[in-house]
Each structure stands twice: as structure tokens, then as C-alpha cells.
Length: 210
Ligand code: PRP
Ligand code: URA
Image (cartoon, rainbow, N blue to C red; front, side):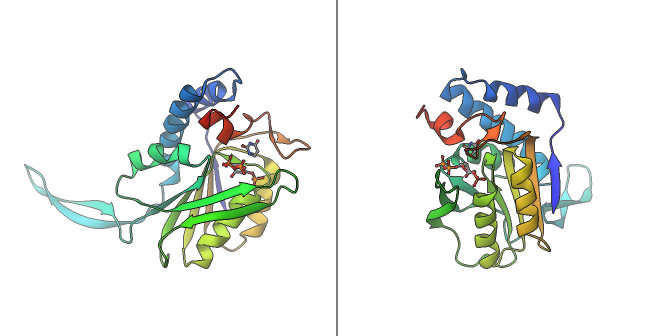
């Protein structure tokens, strides 16, 4: 598993505002979108491309274009929806599929309650969007779901991660082509499975339910 933790003052600055409990939902949504665009740059480092010839006003030259089949972006509903615009801004030709997942806050086990993906993901590169990698249960279930449908590699873009969740994803996906791109690797999980220091419940903060 490849792990990339962002190390850029602009990302840390935006995350600091996001963490602040007084930040309003509209600001939280705007910052989430901006952060994803910055993280998407690293997340798409290994996107598959093919060589093309292009005629400039001056000469013919070789360049690249994103290869087919198109990359598939999969926001995890609900909180991952807040990351979608930031990702497709950078990769506008990507296809988008949806997975609805919720973590049972008693057992911390994930449940897939909705799915709208292409039937066959053979040979597809997938980009999963979910702001929080806490116990890792949700991300592991999403990654397993995509591999079971034929995906060849999965990159997850998360704003924050906990070391416990990262280790769990690494163990569960051993031998698979998996990349995790994080805005920050935080300290730990608390007894309720929340990331510390974290930012609280990402879905609630995005959609104003707090
Ligand atoms: C949050 C978050 C992740 C999950 C992370 O979603 O967006 O999907 O929890 O926790 P885990 O790593 O321990 O599985 P939540 O279940 O709160 O649903 P929501 O997006 O509808 O708010
Ligand atoms: N889900 C969240 O939204 N926040 C956390 O800290 C953990 C899981």
C-alpha cells in the first residue's frame, strides 16, 4: 500500500480552519472542495495515460491524454459528496459512481445502504472520496466492494486519517494495488471511534446538522 500524507503549508492552513469548531458549514464546504483539489494532484500521480500526437501552431509534438477506460471517482455518501466537485474539477472526464455507507455508531461497523456504480469495473482505476479514515472499516468495505467488481487499483483521498485506521486498511488490502492520500495523519482514535484531534463528524459539519 502506498501512503502519501500531505506536507504543504496551504493544506495545513486550510485544515486548521476546517478543524475549528466555529467554522460555518458554507466555509467548511468551500474549504473541503479546495483541499480535495490540492490532494487530487497527488492522488492522480499514477493515473493511466496514453501517448497522443498534437499539432501546435508551430510543430507536431507528442503529449498524453488520460487513457480509457476513464478513471472512476466514487464519493462515499454522505460526507464524501462534499469532496466530489473538488475532484472532478481536476479530472473533468472522470466517470462518477456512488456508494452510500454509514457507520453504526455503537458497533463502529460499516453498512452499505446504496450503490450506483457501473456493473463491470474490470481494468478500472478508482478514486474513493471520504473525508474521514477513522477505524478504517468504511474504507475497507468500499475498497473490497470495488475489487470484487473488477477494479484493478484503488486510490482513496481522505482529509484526515487515524494511525489505527491506516494500519487496518493496510492489513486488509495486503497484496492489492491501493494508495491512500491524506491531508493529515492525526494522533489517534478516541473511545467513540472519533479521530483526535480531528474535526468532529464530517457529514454533520458539511451539511449543517450540528
Ligand atoms: C463517516 C466518514 C466515513 C466513516 C469513517 O461517515 O465519512 O465514511 O464515518 O469511519 P470509519 O473509518 O470508522 O469507518 P458516517 O458513517 O458518519 O456517515 P455520513 O457520511 O453519512 O456522515
Ligand atoms: N466519522 C467522522 O465524521 N469523524 C470522525 O472523527 C470519525 C468518523
